[in-house]
Length: 96
Figure 1 (cartoon, rainbow, N blue to C red):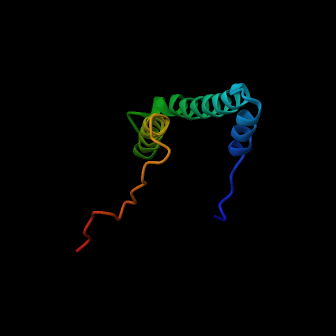
Figure 2 (figure 1 turned 60 degrees about the vertical axis):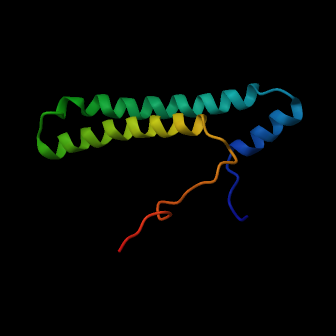
């Protein structure tokens, strides 16, 4: 309610209407490929700084871990149940 459907929902709807997933596959594949390339290229550009100076080494580690975490989240999302209840960070945690 009130949330933007983004560019993918209409493509998914069109896929259902036409009975073909091809356009949806292409859109999602293009997005994932572009993101992987952008994130990977950033890691590679910063890799020479892995041993220092500290600020550049930190930037490299953040980019490297960012790629790994993003890839892991994408994997989990791809294998998730779309109707599974989403738990917020706050649920089940006491901050006393």
